[in-house]
Image (tube, rainbow, N blue to C red; front, side, top):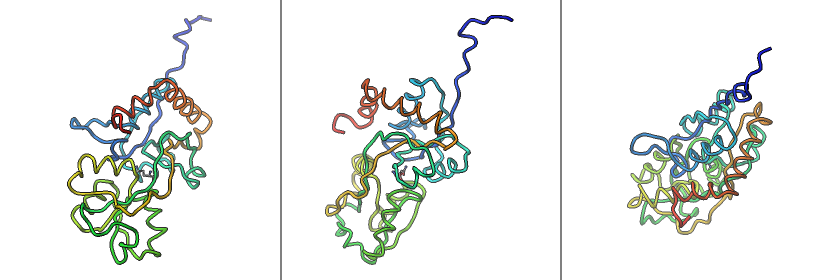
Length: 241
Ligand code: GLN
């Protein structure tokens, strides 16, 4: 038969569809040109490049992305997604790439600064998140109710306008919001210690556990070793991260 040169017989790079959140800065957010940027976006693209595959990143919203993954409609999720036992049972979770945990934020100057101050009050949380799980696990004890939103911005705005007294959110994301868009509006609750320390990982659908996950893990390892990972984090957080 006809012998083809090596380059021509190489299989075309496979494209994986990866879901992400819509607004979760500095991990994913639309810039002023409505282009999706952030640590997760750059990281996912860098992993794909190093490991020789293609990605189509879709900003679906956090809960919608997780649901789509569970339904097998997409191949993976990168969205500041905390590695939890429950998710490790449902999905193939990559190795950890970023440390996080849950913090409480309130309107700037608020009298509410601790869990104990929440009695009888409303707390805003985001659908399907580790923070929402945390709120649900302590709300009976501290006597507060929750109000749920799909996007982080709506959670923050609800506290800003005074509809809710506080919110729970991931530490690096809440700190970033307070340092940027919500500078005059929100602050971290002073008497709340970070809860539910966790790590972010990339979720992969079970059927790709032996193909995509090992590539992702190899990519994370290489990018951490060669300094590219730190460069990506610094691009969004500066040197103070
Ligand atoms: N880290 C949180 C979780 O995994 C929140 C993620 C997000 O809102 N994008 O539940």
